[in-house]
Structure formats: C-alpha cells, structure tokens
Length: 195
Image 1: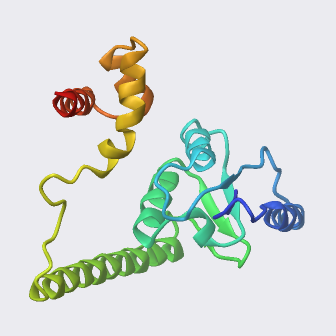
Image 2: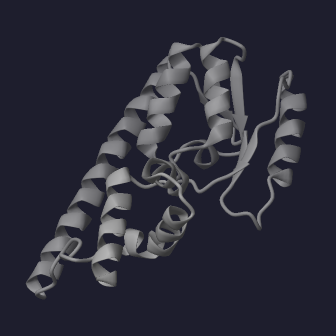
C-alpha cells in the first residue's frame, strides 16, 4: 500500500521500494494499492479495499514504507491494526516494524500506541479549549453568526438556475449535495428579493 498526500507527488518510489522489499522478504505480491489522499482524510478508497480483502481472508500481510502512510493518526492506526489482527493480517513497515497483535511484542506496541493516541486526543482537546477561551476573552463571537449561510449563498445561483430549468427541489438537492430544506430556503429568499 502506497499513499501520497497531493497530486503533484507520486507513489512510484514507494511502489518500487515496496516491490524490492517484498522480493527480499519472500512475500508474494497479490496486488498493489496506491492513492492520493491526505493523511487526515477519512475516506481512502484503496485502504478500504485492502481492509475488505483482509476481512475476506484474501491476504496475510500489508506492506507499507512507513506506518504514517497507513494510519491517519495514532488512534486510526491502532483501530485498523486491531481489525487486521482480528482477521490474522499483519502490517509490515519497511523499517522492520511488524505489527502482529497476537504476539507479546505486538501487544506491547499496541498498548504503547493506545497510550499515545489518548495523549494526542487530550492535547488536541486542551488546545481547542484554550483557543476557544482565548477567543472569547478577546470578545470574539464563536460559531456561525445569525444570517450567515456561506454554502447556500454560494450555491444559490445554481439552485435558482436549476429551478428555472424545471428541475425538482429533490433533484437539485441531490445534484448539489445539499438538503431539500436548503433548496427550499434558497428559493424562498429568492422570491422574497424579487417582490
């Protein structure tokens, strides 16, 4: 599995390194998965395909250049490693780290990762609370202010144009990825402006 964060990067070096690593380690390569996605992205199609194959017991090991390519965060890494372990699938990084949670070494690593994941969550929570408190102390009003509709205001011309073409509100909502109520609200504001 290879991943890069932006479209101006390439997975080819990772694929080349992993192919050589697999040959040296005696692994049979059943497929190569690569994708361009931010490490923080929740939806990663190629990684999801690997998880599906693992669940179907069609692979034994996932090879990665480094663990940061696989997991979005320590918590995500731990969750996916636990799922894979349940399906008897290991994750092997080229650094030599193998995560097999049924071994004492693997369980120790999982325990350490869990502690780090909790520490990360606590730090993020503290930073958010501190930032919100500082903003409030400066008199900043937090959250969306009354009357602000950035997404619907941006999409209003498209909604109005589609409605004038005779499209249904349900069709417009589905096409633009907004709720039907948002379409109704945009059209109501549009009628009120034209009065």
